[in-house]
Amino acid sequence: MTTAPNSRVLTATSADGSRLHIEVYGSEGAPAIVLIHGWTCSTLFWAAQIDDLAADHRVIVYDQRGHGRSPAVGRHGYSTDALADDLEAVLGACLAPGEKAVLAGHSMGGMTLMAASARPALREHAAAALLCSTGSSDLVAESLVVPMRPGRLRTRLTRMILGARGPLGPVTPVSKRLLRYGTMGPGAAPDRIAVCARIVHACPRAVRVAWSHVLGTLDLDAGVRELRVPTAVVVGTADRLTPPVLARRLAGELPDCVGLTELTGVGHMTPVEAPEAVTALLRGLTGDHLGAAADETEESAA
Image (tube, rainbow, N blue to C red; front, side):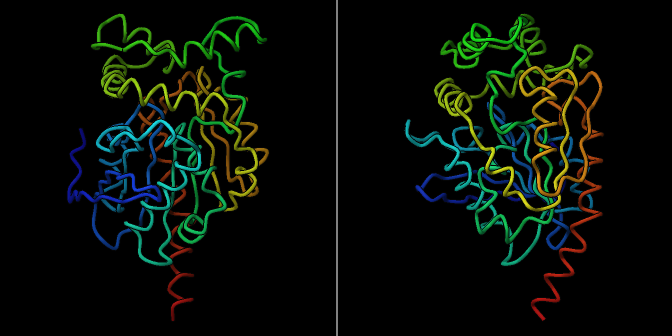
């Protein structure tokens, strides 16, 4: 749970009528950062970044549809287009016309940025971006969750695991060990494993399964090439879900990649497992790009 000051709750309505829960921290008029969580997570995932950045930024977080306090939708309401629609709705609800922000997405949140890269709202509001522990395609084929050689069998087993319909149940020592294996580095702190377990286990089973089908057939390669703002990429070297090969591919395809950071020994849940490193990258992006973007906005309005 975050301890940041000046929290405000908003609701945005997406293109299909879906409602999205939004939380805003920090002072109005401060430089804006929008944080987009990933599959099975919620706004709670960004607590460390909110606590640090809200002191001198306006931090905007929202629950992806079906996660946290954003209601679930019908079975046809889960798609990459829906991710892009939802982000557009959030930006429209939280930012003034022409106002710029740094946008950061973890895992499916990064995919949200790729899905929305050609949307007018993103081009209007994005000053820079951070793609955190994510990929644009081949997620199942490249996943290292199943410890065997690449091939059709590993891909099939991985797809079965990620799309499993069984309930996660209560958080237990066994479930925390499984979560650490799949999503975090071998040296992850027990308290951070526990935080991630509580967040992931809170995701409704139907929502988890619905999004797993979207991720299993993901192809956002074209969206990477449309993400034309300065973009940094970060990945943990022990990431089994979106391993470094996917991050390196992103860095090579982005029109304006401003850095690839590989965090030694860190797993998939980088903002929780290595919060200082992720927060430092966000501060670097705001310092390098958001001030200049704000100045350009003011000049164009004059």
